[in-house]
Length: 305
Image (cartoon, rainbow, N blue to C red; front, side):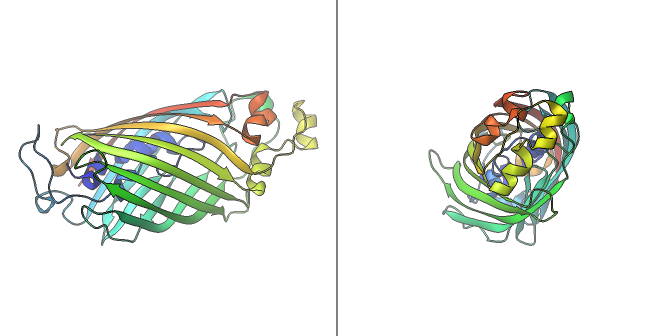
């Protein structure tokens, strides 16, 4: 099965991470959309090889989805909440549209079938960490934060045929800056993702990721200033930038009629774990009131046409 088309099967996967404020790799749910695609899919449960010209992915295609996620109420929280969210993924006029956690990325560089390909384009993310759904009553006394709008560049390289004819390995990163005047900082999300179809209707991926933030970002989300300390009883804390987390994410996407190439309904299950580190782990919001260990799970349904 071609790696790029099977990405539509897992399009709704971003729902599980987009609703979670924890630092999830920008590439975790979309690496397959950047991979090079062979011209035909392998034989298997779906029948003989099928050319992309005979599939829903021959030119323009769109996958829309909806799902729910269960994850921490803020980065470092040990309280978990459920969030709904929609998703959009596809390719229009040769421009790939890839979901991101609470955002989207575009890829303007056309893939070369069967060869390593470069992915490059703008990326957007909406961040509402501690802007709402603060379940911890003590942390809530510190006050709600503003929503951040992060714009930047997404780039990477995809290598097809790593362990088999139809798999791929993607190495990439998103670099974003807040333009809404919330944290006023920079975020870098590097990741490595291995993706492979199991057959014409089932896709799996495994991603390893980390997050690096600037001093402005760390001060906004992890510092406990004197006023917040007085309001909450938490010790004052002055946070600096650096690496804030590392984690792993697993995704399984299934086309509900067993053949992703004809579009239609698809389902996704995604789960992940991240470990906070540096000042993201040491801040009293995490070390006193929350947990360094962050988990999330999600399910979603999508439709490709």
